Length: 239
Image 1 (cartoon, rainbow, N blue to C red):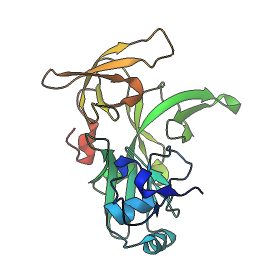
Image 2 (cartoon, rainbow, N blue to C red):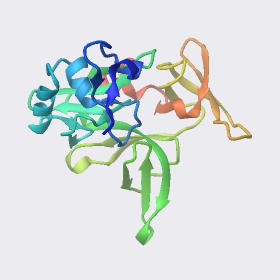
Image 3 (cartoon, rainbow, N blue to C red):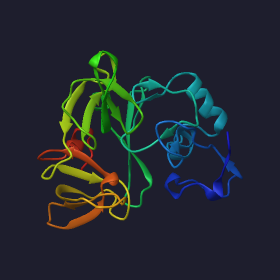
Image 4 (cartoon, rainbow, N blue to C red):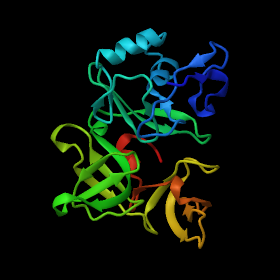
């Protein structure tokens, strides 16, 4: 795997630049190369380990769950709305970003950590006429939920409730949304207009916050988070 130089690592990782020449890189997976490697998060963000050797021991002892799965590779990337749990010490976190796009974690309850907010990429019909719901994270599951691309779902990630749809927030004018990229990162409010582009350019949307301020961004940066109010409050996030 190609190594990443500390000096060229994404600013969102928030790491010291001069400690060493190289740092853990992000492996291919559900997120792109700008996603924060879980090894860096454990060591540099959370201080659960002093060095990479200790990170590997924590992971190889199967003490860390990422979105309900045991993770053992320090290169696996984490990004917005991922859920990280440490069952042995009953600690649970949801990953978000701050206004500058830097990765942040919010401590959440054990019950909240059983749910994850995901974004629908599309739906396909597979063998047997079953409907497969494909998520932007690369995951997919069989379900009959009446959703479409760009909608958000709240799904279970633990035990028998894994991939069970708990909530559905359509990508539609009037519903609540959050911006997770660009100059208006972490702004939340109602989606008030979808501006369809008659070209290869991405569609743009306008979000209006509770104070009447409006923000324009591309639809790829938008996650639906509720209908009348933000469902992020379920995780203890005031957004």
